[in-house]
Length: 114
Length: 114
Image (cartoon, rainbow over all chains, first blue to last red; front, side, top):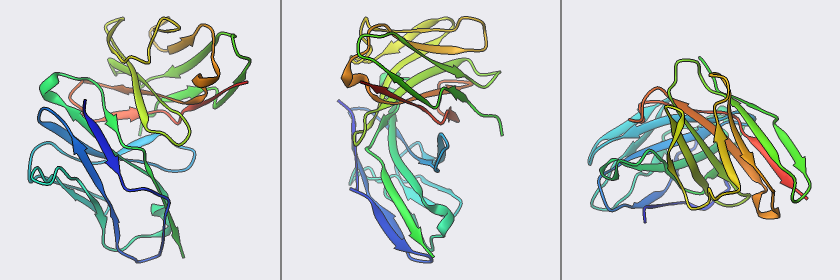
């Protein structure tokens, strides 16, 4: 079945550091790919998405590019802030199967120190 | 921004007891979901609900689980006879359509079965 594998956490960085959180996926169809973020005490929020190969999703300084050849969707940010501290989830939805469900990775907890 | 509300934020119950987790989705949304995350594991899809019926469910969603939209505003998840392994964070989500343009999650209910 479909699956998502994320970089093991937790990740701790200093403010203004470069961030990469790795995500790879396995899917039988043509999935859409997502990054969700969960800030402390809040629900998961969509951060960015990409629906086809080579698409780049971006939001709030975060970027991720849909790489079909490496089945990856790594999350990057050039200069992180303390306010980026949260749990980040990579996910896919396989539209080819008409699925109405998201398949998530295990989440990566990110802590940014001032 | 509108939000999905879940109550309670924490629920403690004894094994074998029934629990009802409550969610108030966003008012003009038509598609409703429950996900759960066992500590240290991935967020898992449980069930999707549309037009007053289940549209898809996972293997986890066995006969012990049921969902209901009793009054047009609430969306509930009932576990009839809780087991220790039901301990998890349960997330409700809603969307206006199934195409994943925007899926809104609640902040979750932490269920602890003793």
